[in-house]
Length: 77
Image (cartoon, rainbow, N blue to C red):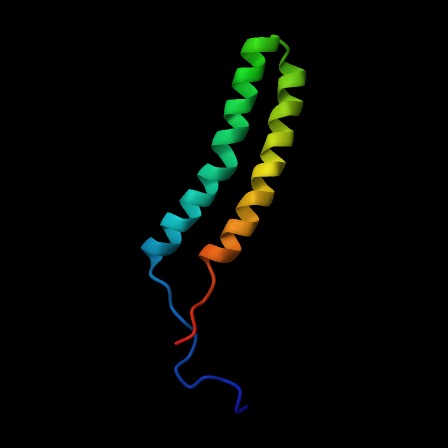
């Protein structure tokens, strides 16, 4: 068990985790809601707007996954 660090796991402050998680939540939610409401206003059809919102939501999830990997990378001392 020589590969384990004697200092233990890296502990992150709760505020840092909350802020980064909130940022990722905003990146996922705001573009999809914006796309839904703008397309609903322009097209007047809820179902097409729903499809557009879902597509934008999944694109935002893919982007936030890449961002989360960078934000939550554990820095080794």
